Length: 84
Image (cartoon, rainbow, N blue to C red; front, top):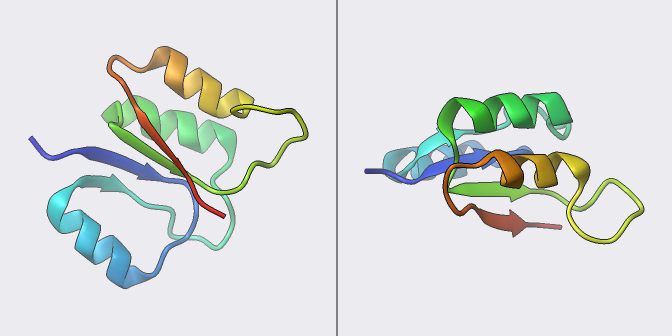
């Protein structure tokens, strides 16, 4: 079974193509961060193994409320990858 991946920020089309060959992928086609409700919807639809997020967009330490919710509702361990 292919790993399931949600990417919350824009990546180059070549990256999407490469990852799509190896993963069930929900990429972000826009230059804006996916809103929290979109992250939750994408995560609910594929129950991701990997969630790739951008820099934090809040002032509190630790995962954002959206990421915390994804992790709490996941049916399996989720690898959280934060990129700058």
